[in-house]
Length: 266
Image (cartoon, rainbow, N blue to C red; front, top):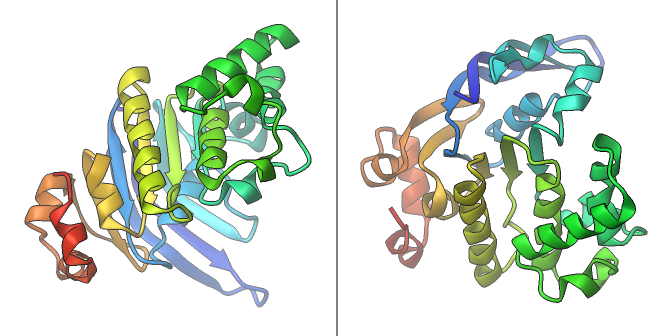
């Protein structure tokens, strides 16, 4: 078991010192090579859950319970220890790569940055690895594109660069937070197929966060449905989509366009 979250509770303190709990006793497990989809509307707590797993909650937040990653509780670690794990063991793919990428830095240099920071590697070796990663995420003309700035690339290409950055240090776990929201349907499908192929080829684990059951249904092995910081249901994706146990899941399904419901690949 690569990730075992037990009774996770996250609360935020306001300027008056009062605390509001936004994640209520969440538990989940993720095996090696498995994809877990986390679905819910805005405000359901799914992104807070991912930030807690990365150790990126703001100082106003307090988390309790356990987040066991390869058997070690991330909530007991110092910031220095967490920095060693982020990127090298847990990679993050963000919703909007244009804000995640440095607009003044060529994309190849941004991919190589983590390699230089965490590994003893020469410039030529780093460039070879950057090209390999760009090929892996299906960037056309990778040798030229590595010298492009983010604004010179399409949204789909920028997201591919974000995936390459997350993969650069060969993490055991990828967390993709709404990675396809800003993309059109065709590019969205391409990005999901890339993620699905990478999980299989590299034998890594993936947490895919989305508000869209169609996205989750395309590649997730298991699905967790959240609402207002609570688990509504959790289980095999096919079962959740075909025989939802909770009214909230049924509402999410009924809110989908009929064509999207019919295309769920379960």
